[in-house]
Amino acid sequence: MAPIPTSPPARPDEPGAYVGLDDREAERRARSRGWTTVRALPPGSIVTLEYVEGRINFEVRDHTVTRCWTG
Image (cartoon, rainbow, N blue to C red; front, side):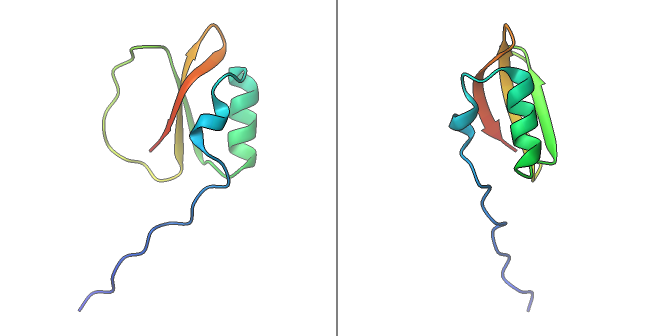
């Protein structure tokens, strides 16, 4: 029987903590906290729905993070 998968360890911060930050500062902070992929997107972008472990997504308007989610 295959082992039961376990959840990966939680990241040290919550996505909401990035909202309101300058996009460059948000990327620097995310990479320093272990996020391996940082994706900045304009509002309303069409994105694929695949989940990528270690990725954080920023919706950015006028160089400010307005929304943030993982995967």
